Length: 224
View 1: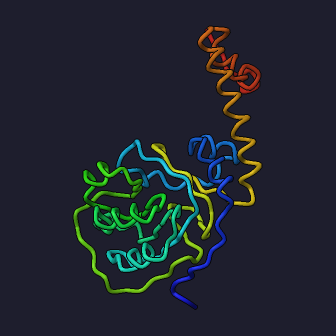
View 2: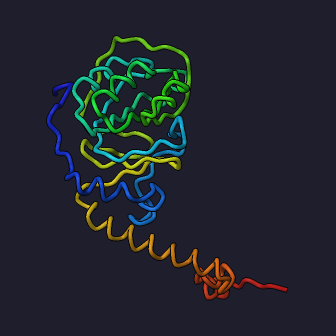
View 3: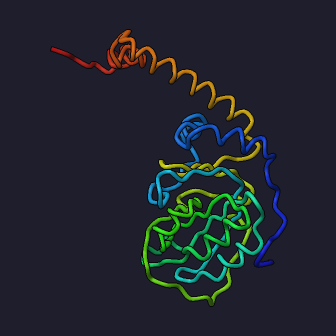
């Protein structure tokens, strides 16, 4: 088994651009409330946002040698996503590696472990999502796997899966579902826009506008 697989099937850029129009929450809801990574993994700056194909990394906890290998082989637009054992006391990625990613045109870096130099990364604006922020350094000793199936953030991520991240978190989308999902996301956006406008006009109370009256009645809700 090769440690590093360099050739992956990346989705059409039109699908990535299409999904990038919608929030992670909208995508999660539109695809049947699936694909959300653990709430632990959040951006170091809420303004950070990305959408791109997964470039997967399985790394030994407390060791970032495979992260550096992944950055070397990743291509423009890729999202490096790392399973590092959810080690909280670890700063496996900082401003130097973020600069390397940004200079190559990578879309984002995601890890279930920790990062450091967070203030510098925020100033750079390169999207970095992590389970923790920690100053503890890492070694460079143990080999891992790149572009193999990955379990990270309570989700299975395959190389080339589309990852959409923003202030609320990250959602995984299978490329063969993306085209239909874009349509469903737009339907949801249109519906919510209509709901917001009806709320502004005070056309009814929340339970009426959200279609909850019959459900509440069936559940036996009583109001005095």
